[in-house]
Image 1: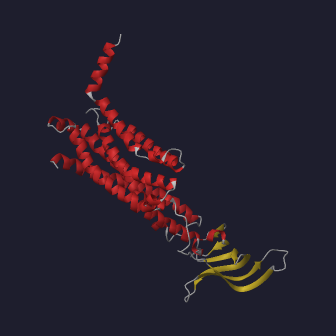
Image 2: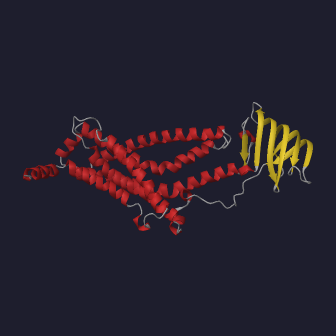
Image 3: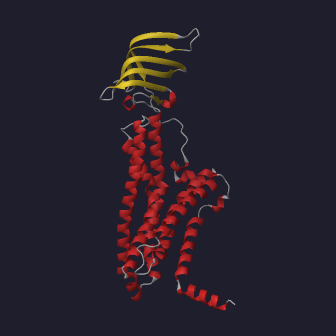
Length: 367
């Protein structure tokens, strides 16, 4: 590897880290705002929010690298064109072929890293997030209860309404509780409530004080009304052995390969397109970065952004086609990186002197 190759490698990697940090901060803020809304509405515990947000960031890491690498190459080469450094390199024999080689020396190892991230880290983090959400959906914690609204837990098995909360948030006042025990619906009203844990079994209970319990259907003989000083409602716990259908994005690569489901095959193709996108967009960035020395800074940047948004939309469309069997399975999604390489070839042709010479000759031959 020559001096210029090492220079480009260093500059591209430095810019790549900065772009990844910016994208990560943008995603972190938007994800945090979204989950803070769920915490405020009582749908998610405040204790696990940072874990879930961190896992969401890990899940998207492999998908953020291709656009980050694309715009890093655009930035570095665009700056070199603006400062006439590329003209000096071309005069010393460092042509476009060497630039492509330098970009690929960075892009190919990066593509392997992206492949590892989307094939291994993405399904693991997605599965862990789903497990935490299932745990939250199958358990209750009165610290997440919000006053003045119906708070649903255990998929509707436990509904709690409270008029007000103590300042610490761990004691409720003016309670209405609906729960199901052994298939029977029960309604409980109580003055206040607090949460406790049985030291022997480790099970959690909501202790309601000074209230009434209504059980059964009104008008039937087994309908009953009871008064109590203290009444304990066991908080349902999540069973890790419970069968849960994993979404395609949480399945491992081996599971996707062994599956005959079109949706699983579409998910595998979607993940496979990410490392190939690194190489395709690395190549595409080289002709897109080219500009005259005194032209506007990064004049083709808007076109590059448009191209990447088109690529992302085509990714989702192609994945949907495969999942619904609108196209044969052999079509896959390999054509998307190939399409970007064809766009790169078209731009190189438009920038070449040969194309304009041939165009002038063709126009000269026209009658």
